[in-house]
Length: 264
Ligand code: SAH
Image (cartoon, rainbow, N blue to C red):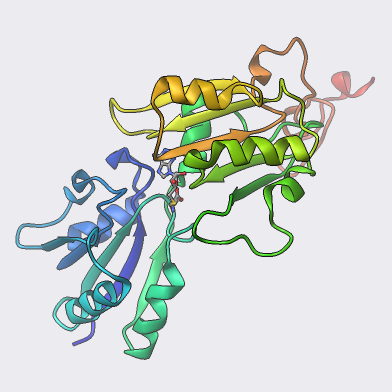
C-alpha cells in the first residue's frame, strides 16, 4: 500500500490552535513525525493508541524523508506535524520533492502562523485603513542569505507592517535596517515570544530606539516574532479611519448603505 503524507500545520504553540482538519488527520494517523524543536509533544495528543510517534529534532532532511516514505508504505495516514503554517520557513519543498520521486502522495493542511498568533496575543491589527494595507512576512539574513532586493531596508521602505521571523538574535541588524529605511526612533515595535504557548507567552513593547534593550531585559533570545508596523498601538489613538466594510455610508454585496447615514 501507499499511504498519504499530510504536512499539517500544528499552529504556533497552543495545541488547541490546530485546525479541525489537522486534528482529524491526527486522530486517524498511523504514524506522526513532529518537529520537536518548535512543536510541543502535546500537539500529538489527538493520535490513536498504537500510533508511531517520532520527534524529528535530531534528524537530517534525508532521514526525515526516508522515515516518511517508510511510514507511508505501512500506514494509510502519515502526518508530518510542523510549527505554524508549513508554507512559511518550513522546508516544505525540500521534503515533498523526495516524496514525488518515491511516488508517495502528499498534501498540505495549513496552520495558524506565529505571525498571526503574535498579533493576536498583542491585540494588534496588522492592517489599518489609511495607515497600512500590506503585511510583509520576512526575516533578516542569518545562515540563510536574503535574495537580491529583499533586504529589510528595501522592504521597510514601504512603511507597511513587517512580521519578522527567525531574527530575534539579530535585533541590532533589524534596528539598523529600519533606520536605513528612515523609520523614526519612536516607531513602535512589539516582540512576542512563544505566542499562544500556554503559560509561556511574553510580550515586549518598545520603539526602534529601545526594543533591543527591552528584549534583553526580558531575557528574550529565541522563538520570538518581531512586528514593526505603523498600525501598532492604534487602539490608543484618539482617532482612526473607518473600515469601509462596516461604514454605514458604504454599500457592499451583503449590506446596502442606509439612506439616512448616506448623506455626508
Ligand atoms: N512555519 C512557522 C515559522 C517557522 S520559522 C510559522 O508559520 O509560524 C521559526 C520562527 O517562527 C521563529 O524563529 C520565530 O520567529 C517564529 N515563531 C514560531 N513560533 C513562534 C511563537 N509561538 N511565537 C513567536 N514566534 C514564533
